[in-house]
Image (cartoon, helix red, strand yellow):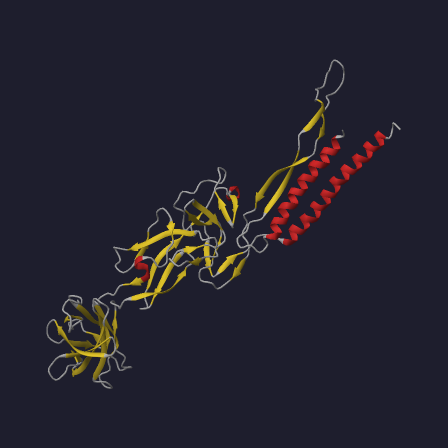
Length: 434
């Protein structure tokens, strides 16, 4: 039988495979994070009719090239194209796009997988999951012992990111240790400045007391608390409950001295307060609360001296979270504080095109992609960043795919014509004997 028949068949098969790839690309034109594939052909093996020969001086003849007849085409490769797709804004807090190289790391009991589709959500247990229910992985945050009240990321083996587990769901109360006075005292307009001063106990109660700065003449001010007729300090507890507080200044009521409007070097710059809880002695305050006056001034200007609570706060529960461009997840709490909850990491590969598609927008490692080390890396290591509230769309170019579809269709038609023409030639051969 004629070789061209089989060449035509192989061409049909090759072009059919390419059309399958094109069809899959087009069907995923709106699939989040999809990476298109391309098809590459190669010629099949050749039948050698005559080998090559070298020149022969004895015969006076030159060399001859080999004579070969090809036997069709085959599919050499179907390769993933890992270029970045365009971004689509969603304004959904849990949607994240990688602006650069790398893959999100997700996992279930079977192991780690990788994806560019950042359409995440939070499940009932607080886990950050993808659309398949696989848990998004990253690094956890722990309390920073060198900076009390702060958190730091521990870069270790990645684990599923959980937003609400354990102490992430709340912030415990903290006692107040420092209060700062800032602003200006005007002795002419306000010879008696009345302010409020707030502090917190160990279970998060907020105490507010009234303090008075009274001008004594000669650029001196006296600091003291507003007291009841029996000498006790009256406190507002959590904004509405009135009670007396055993609040004492450690030492005499201080005199604040100014010189040319600036606090004198010999003046009181800070005092310490000692407090006992009015109702429950087991509920603690700080051993002492330091009140600083070093930032006060006395000019002929607006009277705006205020007391600011530097630390201490009531308990708070998580009210929301955000994902930064660096992958840091920050929780927001009802008491106005924020806390680092963890960090989303990425996996980068030596040969990302070598990853194997396994469906559901997921990739798995192969021997040709490079292994995942189990730790990952920060998104900014190679200059990438996260875009929260956006998703990466498919990188399929419809204009390109339609053009490829036309050339593939014509290639298929041409190969089918090989078969019909070869068939006609065989028919002519058969008709020689009638």
